[in-house]
Amino acid sequence: MESLSLHDLTAAYALDALEPDEAREYEEHLATCASCQEDLARLSGAAGALAFAVESPAPPPDLRQRILDAAVGERENVVPLRTRWTLAAKVAVAAAACLAVGFGVWAATLSRSLDRERSAREQADQALAIISDPTATRTALSGGTGSLIVTQGGAAALIVARLDRAPSGKTYEAWVIENGKPQRAGTFAGGGEISVLRLERPVPKGAQVAVTIERKPGADVPSGRMVLRAKPV
Amino acid sequence: MARDLAHLSDEAVVALVARSDETALAELYDRFGRVAYGLALRMLRDPSLAEDAVQEGFLAVWRNAARFVPERAKASTWILTLVHRRAVDLVRREERRRADSLELAPEPATGPADESAWLRLERERVQNALKQLPDPQREALELAYYGGFTQSELAERLGQPLGTIKSRMFTGLVRLREILGEAEEVAWSH
Image 1 (cartoon, rainbow over the protein chains, first blue to last red):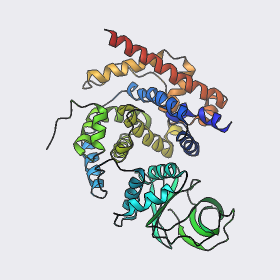
Image 2 (cartoon, rainbow over the protein chains, first blue to last red; image 1 turned 135 degrees about the horizontal axis):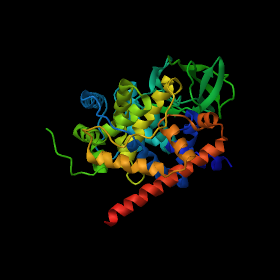
Image 3 (spheres, chains in turn blue, brown; image 1 turned 90 degrees about the vertical axis):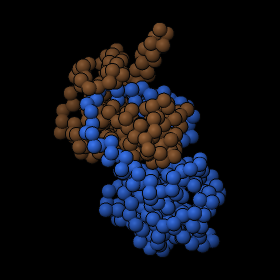
Image 4 (cartoon, helix red, strand yellow; image 1 turned 60 degrees about the vertical axis):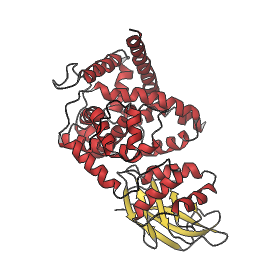
């Protein structure tokens, strides 16, 4: 039933006519639904054709150079993808760029830690989309080294460097706190050089994000110690 | 040093962009920058906002080129989708949809004098295809794609159930694809 109603969001998604939370839900579904992937490929071709139906006055001549300058400026901060990188490695590079600290052996570490989790690939894919969204805002975490990245649609990812592994029987749990009310947003184990968590709920304007240590498998209301916090402006 | 990439397919140029080759990004801009700007201007009705949308869209191309899957979309579709998405974000943020009343008058078929023949033919082809759609389907596609309205907003604005809007958008896109595909087949058979 749920996936049926998600199937018929394909046309609206191809036209960018979904609310941000609907679009996010659809994208999660899309990652695992071959028939939607096929439909979307067909429908977005038709939607893309609509771009050609409007008049095309020449853009200002300097726009081309501005785009190229901005692109080259970005490249200097990110290692070029020389070969076909694994997804996890791309997440690591993007995350490293966000943290503005060195990278190197992270890719391997992250890859191993991601492989352990069942839905790790989708998690990583979604996290990468958020991290690499050029219009997303980045907020430094207090309590540790890392960033909270929030897209304009509210989709969010946490990147934390060198966070000790959660004690046995416990887990890190993220919370989105809006109007003083915390709502659970996913758990992660920590450990390793870098942890990436794609938050399970959007971060609306004015909301904060916090991470506490909770008993496994995670709690519905936070009761443990708060270790990290970020308040996007 | 400038290289001539003109002989490469769009998809091959995207593959070069994935290797951080800025001359390849320039080539993509030369191929699609004008269409992208026209689209953004139509949606945002403000030259400087349209420039922002095009710039952000092409930077998204630059950053995400390694994730482009040629089996799933044409490169032109993928690039214009990224630009469209930025323009939708901006149009919603600026609330320009409510400030302007969106006229749905068909665009005149004669374009700017300096436009390439290819762009002019392409525009006529898609406009003709749109004209063949029943009015309610064309209206739903135009308001969603050019107006930046969400399906729920459209349902409210047009006083129709959400299911009706969904089915107009779906049927409209499927039909548009068929018409455009037929036209292509006819062109190739010559």
